[in-house]
Image (cartoon, rainbow, N blue to C red; front, side, top):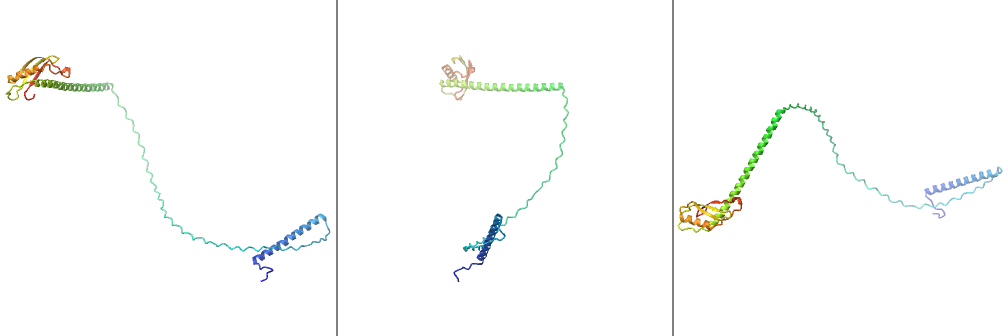
Length: 246
């Protein structure tokens, strides 16, 4: 192998040739430009000497060998997942229902003729009925109030007489040898203060000793208890008595 000129590859040779050809062409163009320029300015004689200078071949730097990068093979394409089967769109068209025929408008009924006399009678009958109902309700209310007042009075009287009998019983000294449970009724006259004025036997028990013992107990109980309600007070009292309970 000679060391003077390296052996270039075919590609470098072609490039060298192209460079030489380009250099020659540039010189030719330059020479033509100088020739015509000088001729235009000086109008010299027809004999023109042109010295052609041989172009020096340009030094071509050998290209650096570039190691091509390894080609990466693309990964195998992944298989696309099969799409789920699409259900066909089911369109159900509803049948249009026929519109019902318009209802005929009812004709207004003719108003009956009003008899003023009959209307007056009807109005008076209604008033009479309402008045009777009001009177009946008032009577029932009055009877209820009377019954309630009577019951309250009876209760007050019973309570009043019970307190009197209780006081009298506490002052009785019973005689011995009382047979059975005889009843005696006494009429007592009193003042509003409860002071006893007189005592009379209205019904004897059949035992004079018992009657006398009860009479003495009534006089000893004076003044008698007063009622809680003033309207319950009575000047004349009838007081029953039995040895074993009233």
